[in-house]
Amino acid sequence: MSDDLFDIKIGNFYFKNPIALAPMGGITDSHFANEFAKNAGLVILGGYNLDAATQQAASEMVKRGRKEFISDEPLKLIENALKSTKTNSVVAINVRSSTLEPLIEAAKIAKDANTIIEIDAHCRQPEMTKLGVGEALLHDLTKLQSMIREVKTTGAIVSVKVRANVIDNVKMAKAIEDAGSDILHVDAMKEGSGADMEAIKNIRDATRLLLIGNNSITDFEAAKEMFTRGADIVSIGRGLIEDPSLITTLVKEVTLLQNEIGWYNSPKHVCRGEGDLRGLAFCCLPVKPCPVHSNIKKIGLSAKEFADIKMEFAKGTPLEYGDSTCFGSLVWCCKITKMCPLRDGVLETIGLPDAEYMKLKKQLADYILDHPKVTGK
Ligand SMILES: Cc1cc2nc3c(=O)[nH]c(=O)nc-3n(C[C@H](O)[C@H](O)[C@H](O)COP(=O)(O)O)c2cc1C
Ligand code: SF4
Ligand code: SF4
Image 1 (cartoon, rainbow, N blue to C red):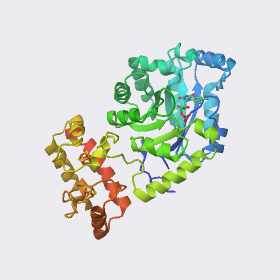
Image 2 (cartoon, protein in one colour):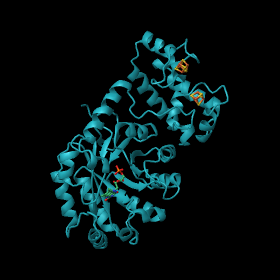
Image 3 (cartoon, rainbow, N blue to C red):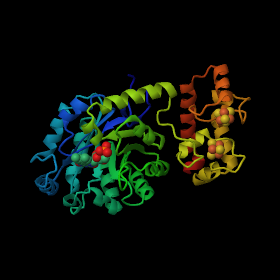
Image 4 (cartoon, helix red, strand yellow):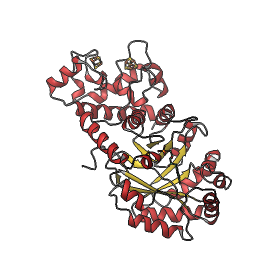
């Protein structure tokens, strides 16, 4: 399988597919990854407790029945885990520390081993949060931001793992992006059960960071729901314990989808409020009252500016064609999964396969959201 089939990259890392193993303390070591996640595009080992205080907290957690990775030499443990992971995927290490120095050391190890470091701002076990570790960092964004900045000075690629709905999701995402993180890994846990898809969508609209969505992915339907809300990658924890072949199944399904439609995480249309802002790539010419207007307002564009940007992109591409479509050009046309004989007739006439049409729509979404008129840069 080509490593760029999915076009997911960060720094020098190319992900062979958008399925990840989520970290589970005391469980996701190299043996677990080699056995159950060898097909994953990303394997996140850990979480590792890096300093004496987090080791002590982990020991207390073990006493009440949780599993944890405990070692007098956590950095050695990490180095050995990295050496023994043979999954042929991008690898990351999820870490916690109450002090900065071990985080910096771990980040250097991650960088030297050509892996990613993930800061755990997610753990809500009281033994950790009372140290100011894990989820406690979300209540002290200044500290989290300073931690991210310091870790970034090592040159490592940095991910931050968070839980949604702990603080304001948009504020959290923007703070993590502003501090220089490369990846945002969101456990979209919601009260009750299942994942909060609205939270993923709102976070997608707040940041252009590589976004890993997580929680309750137990089949491809659940993965697809998260992809359509803007997750670039989805990560799997408990689902893999229930079904050891889950990652293999998801990789197979998402590969079929990507080959078929060319944009595995294409958004829903924005009409019914489910699609994130990337869905503007499927919007009509903004000539009638409909949700396109409130969505372009969010990115600071007038109807004319939006129309001009779309036409600017279409120029010289196959999206320029389509006299017989609703608005005279494929640039205004719907997602390929929405049946339309008019659009499909044009695609057939110009010989543009469905997957290529959708790849152009993905480029169009990026073009709109990265446009200087939108970013102000
Ligand atoms: C036993 C267990 C241990 C976990 N340990 C960690 C951890 O060390 N670091 C972390 O960021 N998340 C940890 N998590 C959270 C998972 O990575 C994931 O966010 C959560 O389980 C929801 O995803 P899932 O529904 O796919 O399991 C742990 C989860 C479980 C069940
Ligand atoms: S422009 Fe078209 S696709 Fe977009 S919100 Fe309006 S009706 Fe829906
Ligand atoms: S021609 Fe079809 S695909 Fe294009 S905008 Fe009209 S309904 Fe949508």
